[in-house]
Image (cartoon, rainbow, N blue to C red; front, side):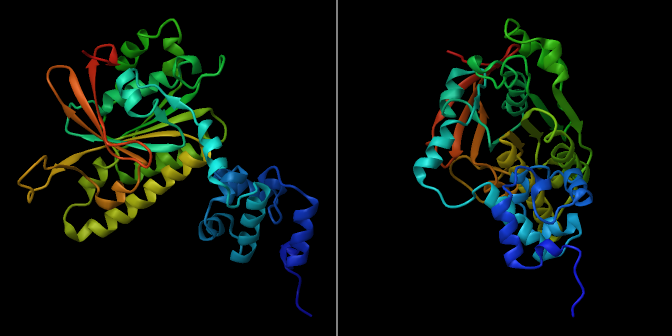
Length: 344
């Protein structure tokens, strides 16, 4: 007679089915096979919701919870059943997308380019040369995210949303936040805006990845985080991995980092802004030789890619390069002391 396993309620498919039929999971502690100690491990690792369990891979959850793959597979299946994860019609998807919130950029022309503002639950990449407005737009969104919904933000009542700002180049300036927030002083409290921006200065690639992991584990389950900014995504990876011999290692590590960000965006309905550097194509003799750094890994990451370039004076030009919804188009905006504005 074979010895009993610790996870006895998961040993047979019939037992699992009876558990699923009798209990409709509403939290991870309701899932079969998750006891208090396992739940504590998962919450500490950032897997505190049914959505996060339902969308994780078997290998990743198995390594975190120290459970067998068969047990983990049944846990994930139970989470998916509780959430009714299945194929759905395009009409259902459309109705759900109608409920996605959007954040104003401060410029009506830019908002129109983005189809109404920066979309939540997705990543937007901004790339361009220095002084094209990447960091300024990122600062602006730190402010506008905290505006009331009726003014283009995500604040409902007195509950200010929070922003996580991962700063890899040391370009974050709270003074700019104050300047930009003054424009909406009738709708927001500047001091509260500053309190709700969580700034993390990343000093290398590992530190950068740890900051995102810390956000997922500690802040997303407990805080009202609605925007993640990584400014810039590629800077440390580009500096630490030099030469073609390190390219594969760099891209693999970068891919893991990006997928962690995208997973958080989808599960927690975050708006994500990734700024990126550029380089010139030496073999291009006609047209604009400027291209984003990071290769195909970065190119496939963001749902919307935007190329920023300089114009005369304070004017900047934003062009949609790639998007599953938005057409290729351009908009002119201005970067002023008050922030991102329309210009004539």
